[in-house]
Length: 128
Ligand code: FES
Image (tube, rainbow, N blue to C red; front, side, top):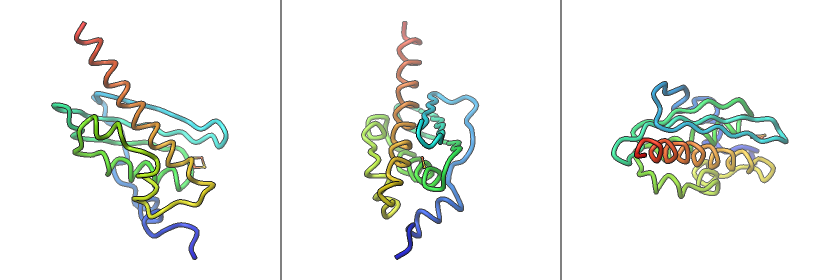
């Protein structure tokens, strides 16, 4: 059996939503100290809906595929739906990851959460 699923390879070779949103409403950056990979997520949110999402990942193929899949899973979703995104859902949508690569999907979950937290913080500050 191949180490990586077709979907992992597809999202690694043709990652969706790569880039930067200069006027993002929320930005989150996370890293894994062990492997050194870094993921940055940008969100545009209109009326509580994620209207656009982009990412930059400096890391392994599984991290790139995981961030790409995570952006697809949250685009068009509400903030609360995006908050409930789990690494398990990302890995399942990719038709699985090898055990020792599961932390790459954890990074995607954390990056989405960090960007949503940044969005919430900005909103709180604006309403003061
Ligand atoms: Fe660490 Fe993939 S090896 S994120």
